[in-house]
Image (tube, rainbow, N blue to C red):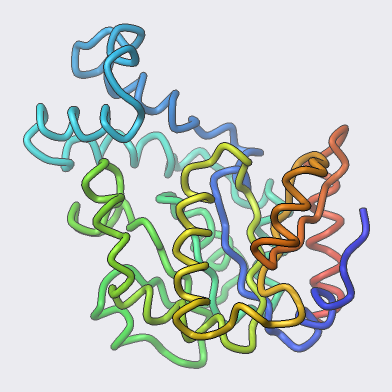
Length: 272
């Protein structure tokens, strides 16, 4: 695995902004999106195999929300699945290394609180950003963890879970979008924990391309973002590099977890 020099330079000057997806927490064996929908469908009395015949994950989530009169009960189930007290954050070297990058901002599409818990484990206070008021009250001296799809400990209105809520995020004018436009200037985004088939990833790049066009950043010489992938894919890499100004970093497909830790460790070495 070769780490591009511009990314190392960004780490050294504390200009990396991590964007964390579900795969970053894979060491804890958290349920996948499909497993989660199956689990919730079963709890509500629906046969998961039959339910999956009638819609995709977002549509099924919307249906379950309608049938359940909102997300509050579903939130409780999500919280039990993702924020179990039995999870030992010290077992994830990747999370602990993330706290040592000196990143001013960390974005995540995850609902779990594992990033927050990793900072707490090291005795570091952060700003957890979910609502507009969180932006107002944030301490500028602390790292801000921006929950791009909401948070299970906040109101259900913040949670991006259903089809309607996903598409509602496409307006590009929420406080989070405004902050993201600002963060893109002079910094480097690092996507970790996403797969090629991940809806979050495709959706995010659509947003970023729109933001880049709006801010006239499309001719930036160095990549504005890097994505860490579990295995090489030359077609995907070519599209990213030539059409989206995104550089792909391929982990060792035989041992992705240790390869990710090696990458994070080298970035931390540069940052410190």
